[in-house]
Length: 184
Image (cartoon, rainbow, N blue to C red; front, side, top):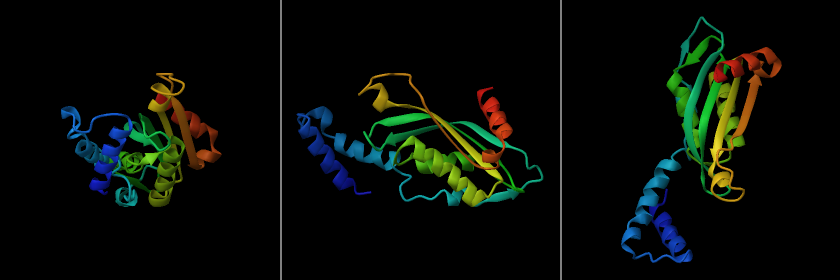
């Protein structure tokens, strides 16, 4: 990440909206935004494989669900935040991953300029590729600030996306069980 470019761009932006970049309250704003960018976009260049490659043998091959994983991301269209919850289910094929690794996988993709539909798919695809379960389902419910504070201005509206892979595509009963358990 090029901090100097970010700080220069922030100064230009502030000037562009008519602000005085030398005003006391704005003097350190370019460096604060640069530091914020390091955190908000820390997923760029990272790969979820490092989190999903450490697995454990498991006798139980029933559904595993990690629900209510809070995430924050930035919409690539307006550069405003969107945030919410991710719910992940997978059916192991003799191996499982540490539960925190699912949340870390979410972070790899949420920490980028992103759209929710793509985020949902990336999480599911990486779990299928690296964990090799019988199936995976990822469900995301999020509020988008581009819908809340600009444009249509509808606070509280939620966008839902989900992706099914493997056995979840074939067995409607598994999807229904997942939905019952995350809403329970």
